[in-house]
Amino acid sequence: MAKKVFYTITEAAKKLKITRAALHKAIHDGRISAAWTTIEQTLQKRARVIAAKSLDGFKVDRAQQGRGKKTDSPG
Image (cartoon, rainbow, N blue to C red; front, top):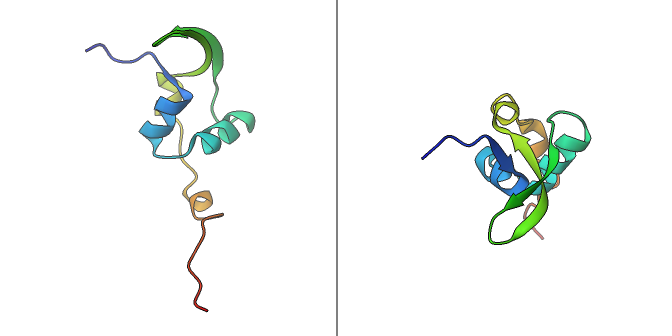
């Protein structure tokens, strides 16, 4: 199988083990670049893609991963 040249948002989020929303925020904040293109999966659609090189250089902010998670509080 050939090495991927680009990843969709969903594929990139799975590879990085973060949510799609976190990845969209990183794109919006300029921490990772993405481009719009037309891809063909089950059907042809317009989707945002991230270059494999860009994804390899992206560092996940682990400090933000704990924020916003629900915790069980006694009582």
